[in-house]
Amino acid sequence: MSAEVLVAAPYVAGALGVSGAAVVASGRRELIARWWTWCLTAPIVGGALLVGPMAVTTLASVLGVVAAWEFARMTALRAPERVLLMGVVGTLPVLAALSPGRLTGALLLLPMLFALPTIARGETSGVAGANTALFGSVWLAGLSGLVLLDAGLVLALVLAVSIGDVVAWAAGRAVRGPYLSPLSPAKRWSGVLGGGVAALVVVGLLGALTVASAVAVAVAAPVGDLLESAVKRHAGVKDAGTWLPGFGGLLDRIDSLVPALAVAVALS
Image 1 (tube, rainbow, N blue to C red):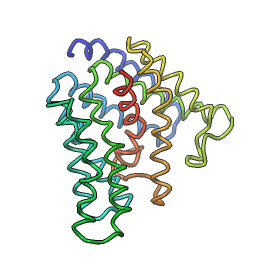
Image 2 (cartoon, rainbow, N blue to C red):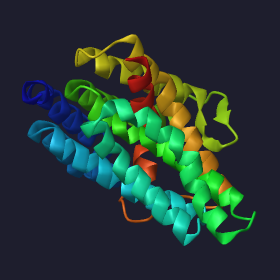
Image 3 (cartoon, rainbow, N blue to C red):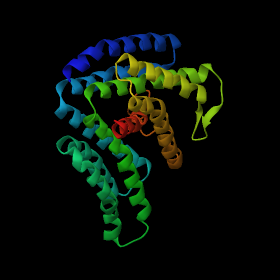
């Protein structure tokens, strides 16, 4: 595990250096803020992968709890459903680390678990909240991929999705083609194609290019972006939070990564 991360370290440093020069040249404050956030998060992810499974599991659980809190706040979940959601999403990576074979069984129990608050209250109005919490838990269960996948592949996916996001932003503004979806009016097909090609190049350079990783970064990642856009538009908010410079909230940062991890696990 350590060797794979160390081999990839020069690529990560080089990508941050090249992208840093590009964003400074652009003069755009949002991109510069995003770059600083990447500089802070890259050592955290790389350090966890370097330390070992326990650190990765802890990282996945913490990310899950924070992302679940942001999702619950956006969707106005009641306190019981909110607490359950945060507990479930934070626990799934631990279960994946301790007993991967039981993860599927745990997911099958989630509908009954999230129905408990509604049953306890004896009301039908809570069904919508239970469904929302169930959706959020299955969506964010993709973070367990940080634990289930090989460290080298995880690092490649994280880096590819991040660089693909930057290239997609730049390509979408440089090439004025058709818009991607009403869910995200600022995004264009040119951005999706440009970002997908860049992401594929990254996983190829890191020696992680397979059918699973290709589908993960070129297809699942942009779908994940649209998925979160749908949640935000339904909630009537621009971002999932305000605390992460250049992005908004954690969900705005990992919206593409979560389904990429899930697809990589499913196809590996």
